[in-house]
Length: 410
Image 1 (tube, rainbow, N blue to C red):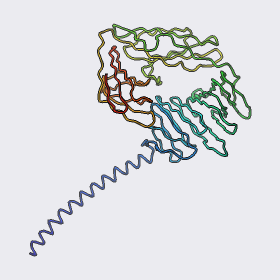
Image 2 (image 1 turned 45 degrees about the vertical axis):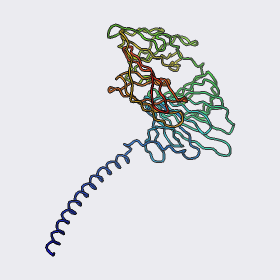
Image 3 (image 1 turned 90 degrees about the vertical axis):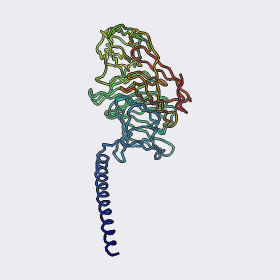
Image 4 (image 1 turned 180 degrees about the vertical axis):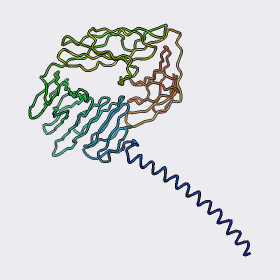
């Protein structure tokens, strides 16, 4: 019995010893992975998803967004990628990337629209004794502020360079800051803005334009409208039998002003990302431009004008056209549909179709990747949406997609 007991004890100890070694190895691996993850998190390499709760009192809210939008939280200095409606508090920084846009509803009911490649700091957001104070600082890029009826106790201020710009009720104004030229611009479509620089106040009203440079507001002038696009018309197909096709662009000059010079941009992206435009022609003196040749594909184009006074208009609304090869068109197939409800009227839709094809849903567009997969985020109040798919060779596909079931029918 004694010998058997020793043998059993030794065998048991061997098993237990191996188990301990394995456990130590697993713990060591977990510690290494955990330590690395902590280092990445500590050094802000990990982009956290934003908190989806209602947020603290006096918080503004990002109510809609497109593309890559991020928030740098003042409380943690961590960067969060916006994936659904979320709150923004005083001290937070909102950053839009080249394809990013965001709309923020402030606590006074005003709407702050942030354009691509912009950085905005929420400086103040509080309500006290029936009044509200909203203050944002534009560090780079362009924003637009729209207010409705507001009580006198409300203060809505945009800081740009050395100026403080108070926005009154029933106002639609945009602010632009170009760090390269160190020049700020103010455009008032309607309403009133009071701009204060070094104690000097300037009142801007509807259809007025001013610049901020060298610590002062320049003399006001009439706001100029952007050119209106003519050819190629919206969704136009330009046929070609070869590998390239010359395309002539034309537009109408702004109804006011004189001696304009124009800038034309043509891109395969609706966001006109710097350095990736097919055409970027500046200082065009005519209202036409002929491109030597564009390869088959879907393009977007826009124009803006600069008057002899130095005022540059907003970009025209982009228009889309397609250069297609002349051959018999076929039907484009799509499948593996997936619909994710993000909350409210926001949905994320994915699927598989022909690589490089353009997918259009609810006035939003994206391109299928090299493996045919696509992902698009839309806003829709309907239960069903139409899906249009086309490629560079004129092939098309149409589907009716249910947002509740994720099923598509032709």
